[in-house]
Length: 128
Image (tube, rainbow, N blue to C red; front, top):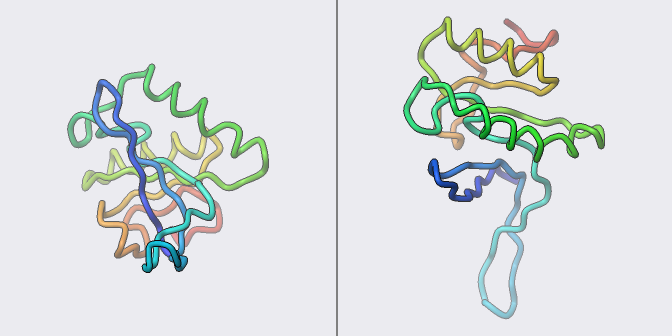
């Protein structure tokens, strides 16, 4: 299993969602194809849709939250991933994500190398 991203394009640029996926053999195509098992999160919910560390438009944030609410209402964990190298901004991002009721991660944009978050995870059971 691995984390796969999918994107949709809005007038402000791409919006990336996170999914848990695995490869499944497709006998018709004669190759392995990704199968999405579960959609669970959103990248750049609060910042960086247009430029690094720049706050997203409020209407975009509200629209994304509307799309994530059914997952949370169903009791599913929802992950929000933000990217910054600014420790003060990272702390603010994690606080806001926690206030929204989601699980936050602030780290490197390359999700193929997830590591312990440099700024903590914003949850009580996190090591920071």
